[in-house]
Amino acid sequence: MGFWKISSEMGKGLKNILSFIFYSNLFIAVCGFCFTLFSVAVLDFYPRSDAPWYCLLVSLSVFFIYGLQRIVLILKMMRNKESVPDSLSVRDVWMIQNMKTLIAMNLVAACGIVFFVFYIDCKLILYFLPLLVICILYFSGPFALKKIPGMKAFIIAFVWTAVSVEIPRLFFRQAETHYTNLWWDLSQFLFIAALCVPFDIRDYGDDLKNNIRSLPVVIGVRNAKILSVILLLIYPLAIFLTKGIPIELFYGTILSALCGILVVLFSNTRRGDFYYSFFADGMLIFQELAVIACVVVLRAAGT
View 1 (tube, one colour):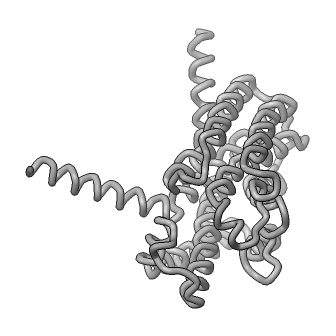
View 2 (cartoon, one colour; view 1 turned 120 degrees about the horizontal axis):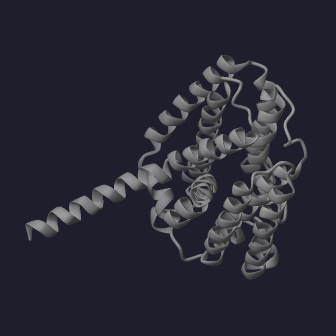
View 3 (cartoon, helix red, strand yellow; view 1 turned 90 degrees about the vertical axis):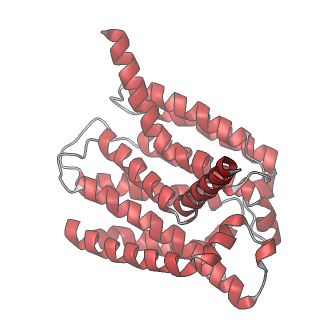
């Protein structure tokens, strides 16, 4: 009995840790850091010492925006008494129970954002402010952008691409490289847009209830999956068309696309938040790991 009791307590403790990591948005913040670091490395921005700090700034910004959206929506729901805990998702229940901690963490993230903006260059405000407005309008106001039919995934992909690819290119580039065309930008946009579809599938019921016409609502879950798979198939092709691309990077993105397709195909409305948080969001990290693995394997094979 003692063994099973210890095992049960360990399992409960592990679940609490995972809930904190995923539901507090710490994991997606780490994904944001890795995704931006990947673009910064590929686009060769490392000569400027501020580039890694910029990746941390993006990570804090992701944490703040994702947290702010959930906090605002849950506080609004609680104020209007639109629902009770039994009708909420496991994630929403967890956030209600830890609301004070989440608000405190978001305030710390906001302070970190302000610090790093001025530490790197206050001109970053000019780049971030329009995107901040888009992010806030995405989930708030009478005409929230996410209610535009079929555009949820593409708005999110636009913001992620702008923050992780375009702003570093405009702000940090000191010398011309081969990566001067828009194929790389397109590849990352398609990658993010495709990975947003599983979350729209997860939220299918809530979107119907709240009159949010996401892709699965507009064209159906099956067709949304097909569209996502098409985007993931085009994604490595865009990488291939990027000038001067290393062959290891191309092979790595093929591996990422195949794994992304599996994530999409296994998505449904019955899967829990952990599936989407770990596998769908985790693809932002896996893209970099897949490329590193291809580099190691191909170089080892060539020696």
